[in-house]
Image (cartoon, rainbow, N blue to C red; front, top):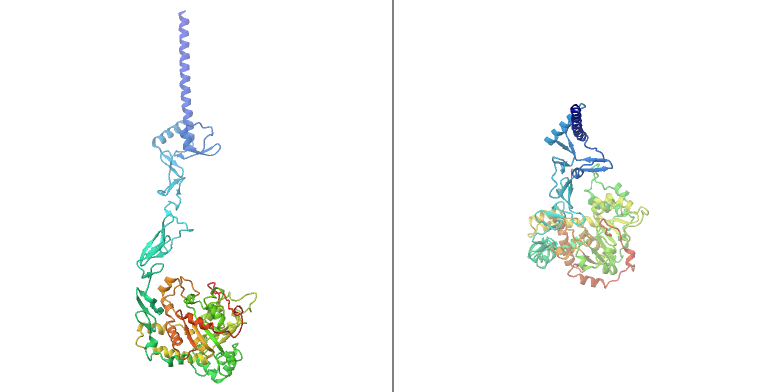
Length: 595
């Protein structure tokens, strides 16, 4: 019996040992399988089974692209060789975990690749990092959200005087103000909420308080350069430029000078150049003398020769001369010479001139038309054109209607060229505007006029009141005396003449009232000092002649006596008895105006 018990105990022990060995083997096998799985995930971190049952923390570390595919932010560095085993993979995994050596996907960092990062970028304080890029706050842009944006729909910083430093906010250079840095404030304090400059005193005016004011506006004969300090134009003096030096200085510009300018040449054979004038020997000599300085570019010889003149499309006879009354009376009873001054916006003689004055003379391309009918009128019967105006007409392509190229652009208007340099352009004008009435003013009147004009100019510039600075300016930078020549021409054809639109206003006055430099220019346009003073000399002579001519055939119509001139005009009746609309010149100008 004892033997059986012994065998039974041995078998029991053996079974216990076998069970223990199986348990140990099972535990070891489970551990090895876990290590094997981890090793595979280390080598291939992008893929895992959709049935992975990792913890919530692991699920938060990954993001799912498609069903069954999960991309991890974590990629751990590990040697890849074909001889790996569960043991080597387990050893490598433990070493990696110990040293925390992970290579993260773009846009993530940290020990477990859980932190969003943007390499070489600092997104704060105007953005946040997402997936390797900076996501900017509203109003900011750039790779690091460091560039502010100014919405150009309502805040566009002036490129020269400001820069965008915060969203929809411009930082201005010194001396510039406003939401977009486009405003100045020279003599005052800028009110940001009102977006305007408040001047330091009533003696400064203008949008930027840039214009000083003077008593009586320097009599409209000078510029106000400081509060109550006038800088007078040529021919005027006094604290308020109230003295007309040409009249006050006896002998400087007297009745003989005025008569000489208005009657230069004494007996005039012709007012316009025609074939019969050129064929006359005296007439031809006058043409040669007047045009001798115009050279042929190829030969440097005088351009205007008989062969050249014979080819010009001149009229057969001087039409103005043929129309003159045989009894010696003037051709026209009433005429008006209308200039470009912005003061016409105040006087507004247009309707009166259209209704009561026979002939309307205009200088160069001063516009007319419905837009200016109250200011300057609709009608034009004569246009006296300088070389620059002629070139402008030739260059303008919009003046010719391609459907009707022969359409008249200057209806019922005689166009007069007077510069010798314009002779060569005459054929081009006749070709471009074949139906319009083009003429060349006769040298019989131009040559003696220019000679007398230069004589008077030299005399006046040597007067005691003419400074060295004025002499230099007037000798080198005077515009051609088109208006004064037009008056001399009109004097030959008109019994009574009114002169409008040549009175000048100062910068400060225009700044206060919004009046334009010329009646057709923008209120914001201001010529530079050179352009503003080009006609000073001619203006002084023109005003003096009109005011002090010894016979009452010419009347100066400025702001002061505009009502008197218009009242007198209303006593006249036009001889042609044509409605105003039939004699309207309507040519659209470059600025949208009508000429």
